[in-house]
Length: 103
Length: 304
Image 1: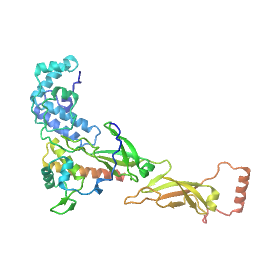
Image 2: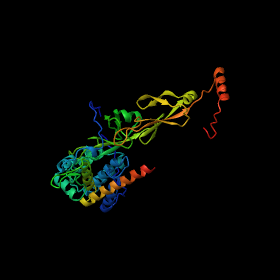
Image 3: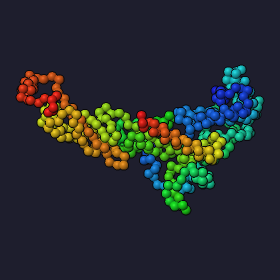
């Protein structure tokens, strides 16, 4: 790959970025809004700001949504199974980080 | 053109006479094992694609039969026969598929694309964002403070430059949008996360956000006090060594350490190390002897 003239700028962890609407989460994940709503109903992610009428979500939700959908499609899981796998993977990562930090 | 034969039975770890149930079970197990969102093995993505490709062929009775005949020819002739011969014998294309695995562009091998490319449909396809990737970014302490351009080379051979912001910390994850795995079906690419790791420094030692450095001073500087230069991450600072400083005394340079969580910087601690000359001139020796005779200082006594 050739060198870009204007290199992409590394930005701080996305948690500091502004919360977005579910339509933006869906678009960034590359999926339909109906699918995003379905995963929301299964508890894959929760709103972080906004109101119950106009909830807002962390931008990291788009990566999580895409991950759940990849797992669902690739491993023939149902929605609840994909959400469960995501939660288990989060838990494993958290434990691994804690283990690494205690060494 | 000759394309190397791929042993799909070996990829799935099943015998050549395996039933469709055995093939499905083997595939599902390996797909779970090597799924790139699950496995942390560096070659997981390649293995996952390989397993999916093998299943795409062996799970379809018609494709499997074609593949088995191809294998027989390969074993007889040493390598896969020419494509035109194969087409004459078995025709081409038009196979259905119930395989759920789908990949981004370039997901299947040349071997697959050549012999089974047509009709290799995927179920449940649709645009989907690619996986996020993570890579370790090793920085010197100076680089972590100043930031700047860095060329990154990833495992897949991709190489590009990024602008690292100044004042990044150990363990910080910095995001580079759109540099993760490619999306599927026209979906956006994932992001690349760089996990910052700070390399050990030949001079400075890290202690959280603080830095430690040895400050070598002459005996007379330690005894009489002096203003001496001390190295910092961004150059040199002048520090006042108080009179009567023994080795081990720590002098604090506020805000000259590493970037701290929540803003600001840690401190730099310069630890006094009294150094003596290895060799003395006659005059110097005489002066030290006079000092020794005049002094009642007992460094091992209670009044030190």
